[in-house]
Image (cartoon, rainbow, N blue to C red):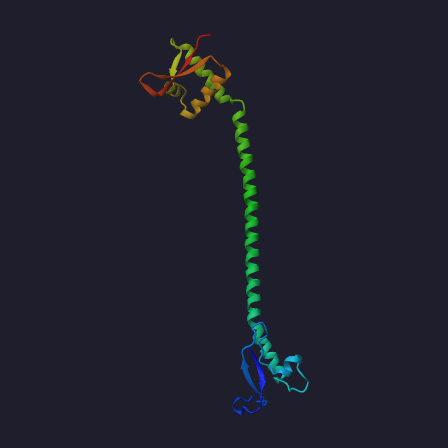
Length: 194
């Protein structure tokens, strides 16, 4: 639709400039415009027209300030968010560093524990293993229950297991461990014949 200039005889549809317009349906591929035909052909504003707005510099500054204030608030919000995220990133990086350090410490401890387990038995284990060997040699059936050995040596279960392990590694194939018939929880160590 395009507004076209019409005869000035239609006074009831006058514009403030004294021109009359009538709306006609035209091909929809044309540009929609409500400007007078003269203004449509000379698109730039002619110098004969007066200023549209008259503002003082303080009014213009106030308008600009009010228009920019929401944007400034949003920028400040974004800056605060960036600072907060930077702090989070720094905290996470320090936590990762601590976890790496803890992982290295754990690996060192595991390595030390493995090295200690590979070590030769100490004097105490060796002495206890020798006592077990003498005790089994002195018995006519060359066997003893773990409970009997614990009582004979005056040690707990873990120390007895360490002593028996030392005894069996020092003389492989010479000793055997069996269960007691009727009670599977109790075990016996036997000195095998040479």
